[in-house]
Length: 66
Image 1 (cartoon, rainbow, N blue to C red):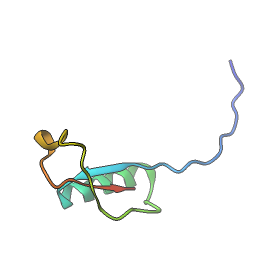
Image 2 (image 1 turned 90 degrees about the vertical axis):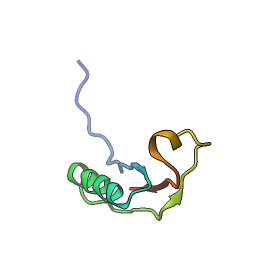
Image 3 (image 1 turned 135 degrees about the vertical axis):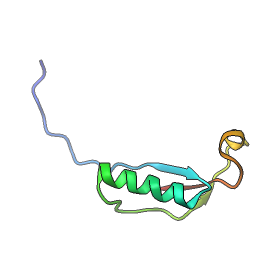
Image 4 (image 1 turned 60 degrees about the vertical axis):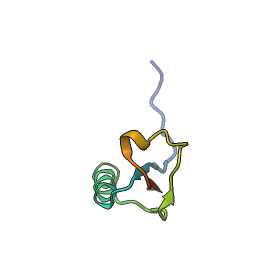
């Protein structure tokens, strides 16, 4: 068995993609409960993936990085 070693601190990040403000806030709250308060949250960025997500998620998707 390998010895236990310390690791360097890391910054976790997550992309949240939705068109619903309530869903976005739910995701941020969920992330905060598990990882702690976000240090940085990006502005909303239009998210397009060639229409791949349109059938399941709808139009006008926006992405933020937390």
